[in-house]
Image (tube, rainbow, N blue to C red; front, top):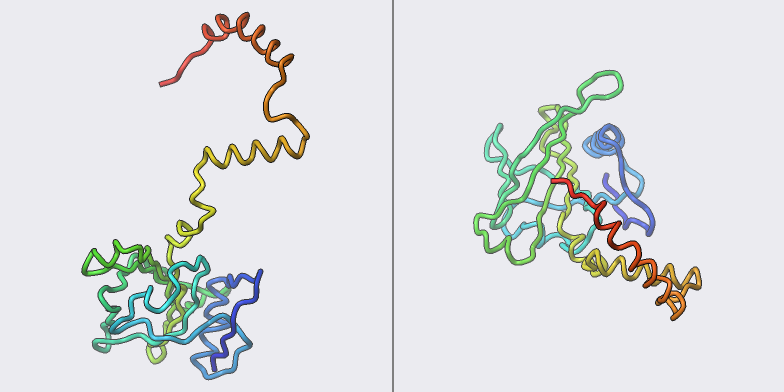
Length: 209
């Protein structure tokens, strides 16, 4: 039985691939009760199931989902989600410490049939899916889903490199009690050294191509 709860501040849910299978997926499929976790149970396939319609596209924290796959047939899975679908990019086998196959780790990206949907700041969505190897239980999976572009929506990330350098310089001056500009005496010294050294220094400068 899945008992989800909000993730407390400062807590990061980062299980290993083995732990995802052994501590979470196997117990859930077998109907065992789990302690509180950030796992949520939700359908991610079907009409109006674009990831931004299910999850907060501005969240930089990934969503951990327990869901059931939607099948077209016994061997074919329907990964259509609203106006788009989840496209498989990579598949890896996951083994326990004894070399026993636990299941599969698959990587997906979300793609829309209509590019206009993807150009409306809906983000770049990725998904890591963990599925069991057993034929009778591979309908149930655990997925880690997130918007890779969410970090770009953070106001702090919009500061360019130049602004960061300026802010850092001002902070250093304040902490060291240094004047932000040289005084008249320092200006004179700088001018003297600049005039005497400029020619020699410029002749020693080389540029690599």
